Image 1 (cartoon, rainbow, N blue to C red):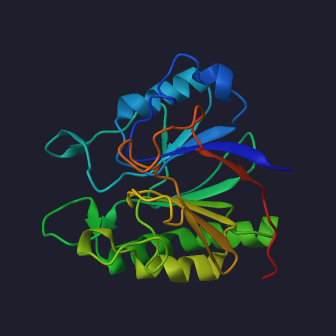
Image 2: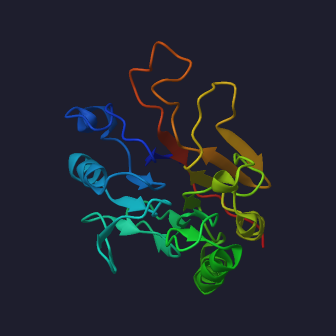
Length: 229
């Protein structure tokens, strides 16, 4: 059984931020955000669809004050966590931010920091694997893994740690943002081991197409997949 999911990231899409969203996309089970979107946008999606919204922070972290990080009302932060969606039973986990390329930027992370988050997830992931036959269904991150949908410049290199995470826990799906596409010949998705790695970020409005699609292509059909240990 496939489960429709709305995935968004980085750029607010007027086709989603629309009064007709529920009519067009009310069938989705929940929404995920890969970061760097206005929190009002995520709150609109949650309210319009009356569905859960799961998110990770991007590399442009928003703060309500100097020491308080903002969060969208009613949404579930996946950053460094493993969460099971109660309605579908899908198991989600997430990592925030991007690889550190500047100093004193709280939404940029060293490899060891992502590795520490992954280590803290291990007990829950191992429990899921023993109980459900699978550790994880959907990984949500802002940045991609190293060498998969990433770029060579320091700001857009992926995390090497994510490659090991995908290899060990084998989720069928990994969605990310952060990598802007301006050319339709660039791939949106690659397969890595057992995982379909998908760049959610749509083509820029100034991209190669002069005829934008009437419906946003941001839905993912996900299904649980048991993995042999």
